[in-house]
Amino acid sequence: MPKVGMEPIRRQQLIKATVAAIDEVGLADATVMRIARHAGVSAGIISHYFGGKDGLLEATMRQILHDLGAAVSARRKALSTTSPRAHLEAIIDGNFDRSQVTGPVAKTWLAFWASSMHQPQLQRLQNVNDRRLYANLCHQFRFLMPREQARDAARALAAMIDGLWLRGALTSEGLDSDRARRLAREYLDQLLQAQDARTPHPSHEPQPES
Amino acid sequence: MPKVGMEPIRRQQLIKATVAAIDEVGLADATVMRIARHAGVSAGIISHYFGGKDGLLEATMRQILHDLGAAVSARRKALSTTSPRAHLEAIIDGNFDRSQVTGPVAKTWLAFWASSMHQPQLQRLQNVNDRRLYANLCHQFRFLMPREQARDAARALAAMIDGLWLRGALTSEGLDSDRARRLAREYLDQLLQAQDARTPHPSHEPQPES
DNA sequence: TTTTATTGATTGAACATTCAATAAAAAAAT
DNA sequence: ATTTTTTTATTGAATGTTCAATCAATAAAA
Image (cartoon, rainbow over all chains, first blue to last red; front, side, top):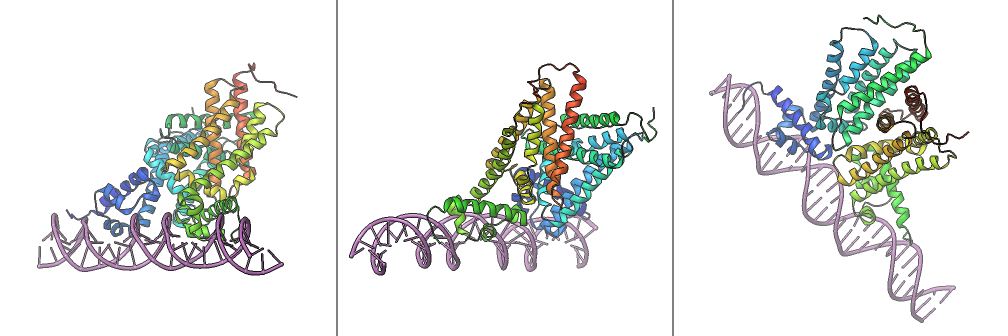
């Protein structure tokens, strides 16, 4: 079987198998043997490509975070406007992107979330990601409201997004991504309406094109 | 040392020690030895009082859920009104009650949350609790809006509460419970204002006393 | 023939649980 | 009031299991 250039293939295989194993039995029971079996390879190969189980878990979390970032980024790049509202909606949609919201991925996500509280390696990844979401939201809200209000709006919308995710991961039916998206968007509407009510004379929004 | 009637004392001790151990090193590394050391007793005693580690973990989750329920319940009973808004605020405040929001408890809570996805015993407890929060919220919102809107409002506020919890558990500084409460209350305000805007002629609210 | 990829039995460490031994308190007997 | 007996609580070493990591052996491609 050994061909040259197996490394990228095996790495992807094993990361996918890790998500599958965590979905199946949870992080605590996702042993190297079970993961290897999912990938159709032997257990030893994990240490060979990832230096050990920890390396594989970190790579898996990286992959998930990367996919999430990519989903958001793609939606924002597809926009032909600088309208803050459109960008905020794109961030919401990206966070509930199909690829992210699959049952297995959601469970893996939550498992890493809990784990990251005590594993510095994972905590770093978690923090980077948290801050990115918060900073992105905050930056957009800044076009629409004063600094402190923008910060609160970002904090609240981030909490809403994560909360919908969390509750989706727990229900047996999995996350209803259409409903989650709708609820998050309605919340955004309310945030913006509340702001309009406070400042009936808009101050410094960027060019809200046609 | 052996006095009669140690059972309730030891059980409480061990549950407290479990929370402390999970706070210290996470659920994955909370071994019976470490928990026992926190409680100042030997490892064997855990099997004696809880039948095994699983029994202790389940009892710990029960305790945390019970404390949360009690905090909400106490605040609602202290109300001398049936105003839906006051009850909704009491539910919010109860969920961010001091006793719940301590760093150790928040971490333990999240650890069980992740764990409950794959442990039927814990999942049952989780579901009961989820449904209670949702049903309570939904019941109060029903006084203020039609069924479907009440359901969405309950889903969204529940997600906001859980999201604030989740994000609070992850930050190293712990949850800022005052800020969390404020953000959740502001969201509630927005929900109710949005509803007032839709139905300028209120239909069937209960006696909104003085 | 050499290089690269992969296997899987082996090793050692960590762990939950068990249980015979122990110790303290409570109860009974003196 | 002592001493003895019984009951209750607790210990911690021993047991058996599970697991991650290792590495010599193997097999396929180059």
